[in-house]
Length: 341
Image (cartoon, rainbow, N blue to C red):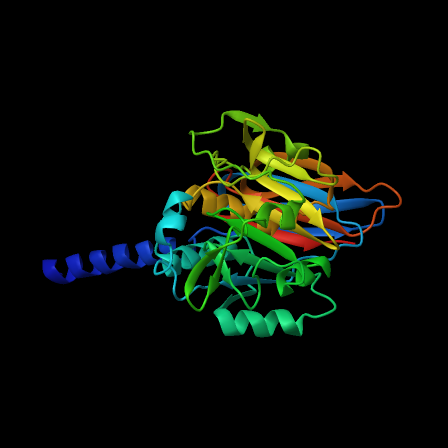
């Protein structure tokens, strides 16, 4: 039977478009998987792939700090309208915030984290008020440059600080943390923001280029395949008790820093929004790692059209054990965080 060339071409084009859509939405034609179980004194992990891929495993003791179960992402519907002269002086960039949030959500889904709630002003206020008393399994990611004054206005009594102290995780990226709040009249600068969050000035406002010094970060920099190396808006967390830094460092400032705050924590990512920053933030968030985590062991390897089996010893007296598996190295195609004890 003679096949019409135009019909055949249409089929080929449709297949190409479908393949592109699958790639764009983080859906791979290959199969990946990871499982982890504990038999008491060890964590037994399996990593599978239908192709040939590198993988990394992080085993951590999180103590009594619970797993991250839900992430709020704040959507400022007036983003870009209120940057003004002060924002421009601070180096803020006007990005497509809806697109940036969409990319973050996709990156998180690839890594197995799907419970994300995108919140406008009213929804975020409602969610944080509903968390009153126990926000320990919740996180808030701020990708814009300001929060509404109903949540943060530059006062120690703000809802944001109460929420973090009760156990919440604040993740901040692409702007100097807390420098601005958004009022009904526009953007307002908070003069003592760094002292409110960290008790001292420790945020970099210097965009002098890439950081070249790799921070070991208890092996997390390599295990999470962190690659974004900008420290603008990053922290110099040296001397802050309980802090953890990872990624890259320039003049004492880090591309990723975590510090305790009351019963919760604050994590700051350096640099303006870029694709690599999005990937690194998704890795850190999906891994469940916090400044309260004690990394027991990291291991990497290659799995080829089958399953790799690994066993990790668990010391006596450890608390909540989590295992994070990511496949793909610098270009993660699969991730999963598992609580094994």
